[in-house]
Image 1 (cartoon, rainbow, N blue to C red):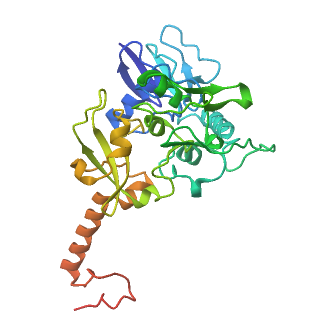
Image 2 (cartoon, helix red, strand yellow):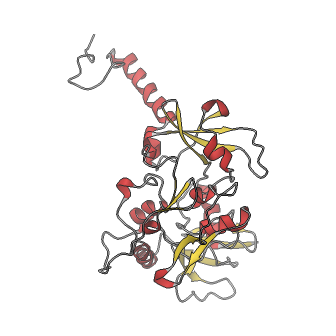
Image 3 (cartoon, rainbow, N blue to C red):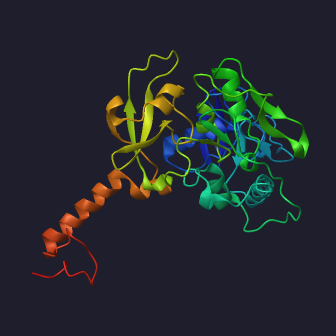
Length: 343
């Protein structure tokens, strides 16, 4: 066991734990926001992390035996803790400035098409740029431009939005058979694409949509149907016959219609379990599922603004106001509404 201090909070963790994992343990234990952001790391996939550098932290004390600080910021997802290590994340202005520079690099080629992107409202890059980015960009050269392509009958690829996190490549490499897509070329010319005349069509190919932190890989069956904050997420399950699929999903309702089916996400935005294409694309009838109840959505998320539980709380408050004041509010509210009259 090793003791590590992150942003003045000390925790004891097993040997071999990374700084990022230790920070997440602190958040889960104390309810803080100590963990650095991530874009490429995915705990359920092997060899992820170390690509995007958004999780960099400042190590001001290497260990109790060797208290010298590390000379430059390190990727917390790839750096193991040592006994007596002291780490700064949110408490270091220099580190936050360095992270803002990383975000600026990630946004160099990213288009400003959030108003038409299906990932808006649940995009990790939006959250990252809002919380850790600068207001402007110093990049003065033309952005790279690609035409959107279909890499399967259900998956649309928009390379303009890709930040090269490699998550989709890791998913297809580790949980599917016969991977047919990957990274082409090098440097600024790198791009995600399929092999010549190949398409992603295996049973778990749809999971590339869930792991993509931006809007580069989207669900063709859901494109432009609704903004995500106008839908209502509900957890559900079914007995799926596909080997390796748990059948535990999140249904996104608009009225009585299921607009899309996704895996359930944890507090870090990672899929709790991967689901098959049958559950994702072919079971969009509410009768196909056993409903468990409204999904737990973070109150920081814009999706929470239209959530069932929040609406129930508002309704309870309205009933309390009506009971205490005698104001008729069931049919409307507001000073100019004729239904709101004093008894």
